[in-house]
Amino acid sequence: MAHTIRSLKSGNGWTNSELVGFNIQIHDADTVTFFNTPDLPSRSNVSSTILNNVEVPQGPLTKNDRLFFHYLRDAVRGEESMIDDFVAFILGMLEYDEPDRIIRRRKDLSFVMCGQTVNAQTDVCVTTSTDILLLVQGDKKGYDPEPQLIAEAIAAFYQNNRGRALSGRPPLASKVFPGITMIGAVPIFYRIPTTAELVRCIETATYPPQATIVQRFVPLVPNLALYMVDGLVPLENRRIVMQCFEAFKVFVTEE
Image 1 (cartoon, helix red, strand yellow):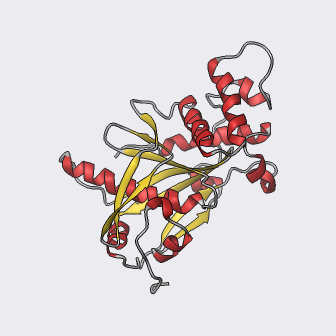
Image 2 (image 1 turned 30 degrees about the vertical axis):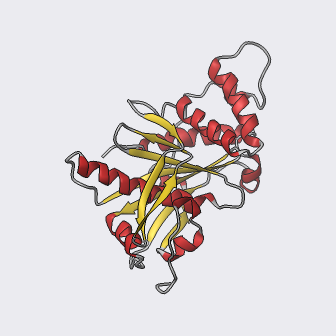
């Protein structure tokens, strides 16, 4: 694959061709490999109302409970902005914005590809005042969100290091970004390694001799064959996925 043609593209235009061209591979991982533990958290900060009702129940509800069911209903319809609303809400409900972090939508990023600056834009991300910590890419009709998510991680690494240089901090040689794709109400989790060497290869349109292995974790719901259809709607799926969100927080770290 060293002779694959690599042409200029924005991050939101990345496809599997760019992954092949820059020796980036996606490997499925089991629970132990992905989370570094055999057991997901037994409890989450999600209310019993959300975990025990398929649809919005009758009677008074807390604000989070009410919003969850509204956002879930809208996300199932598949409109991109509604999907972004839903995942941003989940991140906030589970306190991904603590301590002193921000959940942002539509953050503009950039990186250098084939000698020119190109843009990338996150659907949702978690940041500090200086660094990007987590990235979310939703479904865009006709596009696989995985290559775009990986491009955004590369852009985040590039921009974080630029910010570090401007503030007098040493640049990082590598960072593993936590990432999520969200297709409708179906989250999938990723750990995306980024390195200064990979950034250099993308800048110079050079094939990296060392493969970049992205770990992908699909929640181990009872009926895995239907997960991409059902997502968070069935209660068993919902409970397991919320445990995954809780476990995933450990990877949202500052350097």
